[in-house]
Every structure is written in structure tokens, then in C-alpha cells.
Amino acid sequence: QRQLVESGGGLVQAGGSLRLSCTASGRTFSRYGMGWFRQAPGKEREFVAGFTWPGGSTRYADSVKGRFTISRDNAKNTVYLQMNSLKPEDTAVYYCAGRSVVPGQYDYWGQGTQVTVSS
Image (tube, rainbow, N blue to C red; front, side):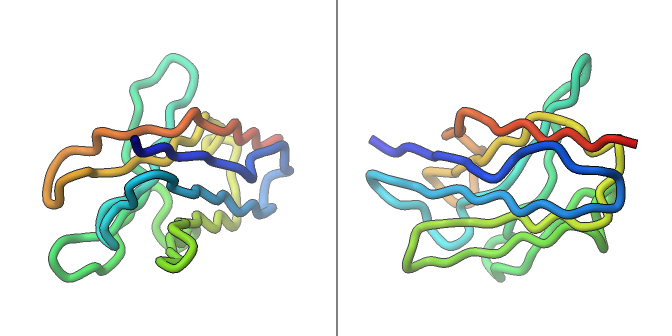
């Protein structure tokens, strides 16, 4: 059984930074298999950042390009999301996601961590 546990959310002022972490336990995911999504109040869940297959390069939503950076530590089965220059519109619950089959859909989800950016 795979599990994803996020940490690192919180309250920050606009322009500030936060780093989210997500650690996988149980069967691990491939180096391409983990990513980040978010869901703001009243909106659908949206993709934020992940890794492409087969190249393993990073991919971002247009709204976060140049401000967010996804990285991974394969030895720790952990993926990170460094968020800089945060804006109030980045306020959302951030979810770590995993794909059991790559390429494929994300089919494992963490419990989510709240990120609130005040203006």
C-alpha cells in the first residue's frame, strides 16, 4: 500500500516563500511518478508541477512558472515544491500525487496541506 504524506504548508505574506514536502511510503513511485496539484475554494483541482516521461524534465502550470520549483530526492522517496514570490491567488490546498503506472493518470493522493497567502 502506497501512502503520500505532505508537510510544509502555512500562512505567508504575499511575496514570501514556502517549501512543501511529500514523502512516499510503502511501494515507491518512479522518478517520474510524483507531482503537485492544488485546489482553491470553489475551484477544480489543477495541476501545478510534475516530471515528464520519459525525459524526467520538470513541467509547470503557466500560473506558477518562474516562481515554483519541483525537485525530488529519490533516496528519501520525497518530492518538494519550493514556492517563491507567492501571491494571494496561490492560496489553496496543495496535494501531492503519485502515478502507479508511468505514463498514466495520478491515482494516489496525499491528504493535502493548506497554503494561505495574505495580501
